[in-house]
Amino acid sequence: MKKLISTALVLLFAAAFVAAAEEGRFFTYPTIHSDKIAFTYESDLWVVNAQGGAAARLTTYPGAESFAKFSPDGKWLAFTASYDGAQAVYLMPAEGGAPTRLTYNPGGAQVIAWTPDGSEVVFRSMFENVIGRDPNLYSVSVKGGAPRRLPLDRGVLISFIPERHEFLYARKGNEEYYWKRYKGGEYQDIWLYDAAAKAYTPVSEYVGKNSYPMWIAGLMYFVSDRGNGVSNLFTQRLGTKEVKPVTSYADFDVMMPNTDGRSIVYLQDGRLHVYDTKTGQDRRIALHCLLLKGQ
Image (cartoon, rainbow, N blue to C red; front, side):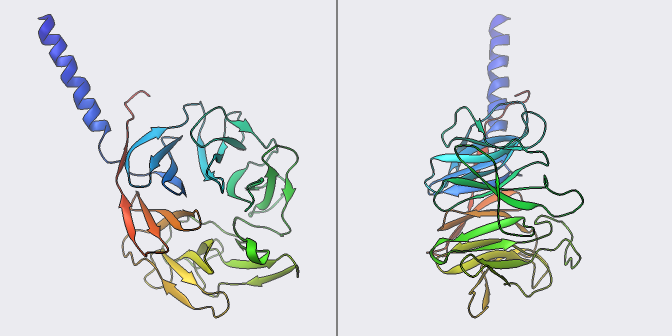
């Protein structure tokens, strides 16, 4: 009888392991640096090789972690967590470790990007808004201190163009609304800020989704629902405003893209994809998270 029970337990754990090792889906907020992808799953941060495989869990703290972004050198992860109630910006080594809190302001804080030199984390927050629907963009030093507001009336997303002392930004709206062919007040448009001239110039002309600007090798990559009403990746040359499609999905949107300056990681149909901007190769990443029930 004991042998029978032992065998049953072994089979039970084996079945649990196989179930847990099935290909995962419905990840959120992926970020990429070279051969590593970090993402949120089950409210924790995980990391996986960019070729796929088994993901390693980085956090197990009470509270939810999201909006992770690799530092430019890939050594750090900045992310948003709600350990003490309100969302705040935290920093930890990319391989895992104890997080350091960087912000203490009310109004929440969602990590958006790093400054190109890796000295500051950019986040969005409503803490200076008494009445308003759009947040402002701020930066905070990796050493801590008071946040510094960027020279914008409002903003939700950003991508720096360091060689030109400029940045692209989405100034309003919701980057992940779920209404097809939406043209209302929550759609995003993209602007260019010139720090030297202190000038603000609209970049996108299409009325609809223009989101997630990403500056890569002289081109702006971005997400738009122009065409068939499904959000896809596009490129645009700022001088000529020439727009070209990169992906051509007709079913589910491209969501939450992030870049390390060469590759773009994004979600589509609940799965991770990586697009190599130099080779044009787009591949789906098959991975699994070993997460047993009760963990």
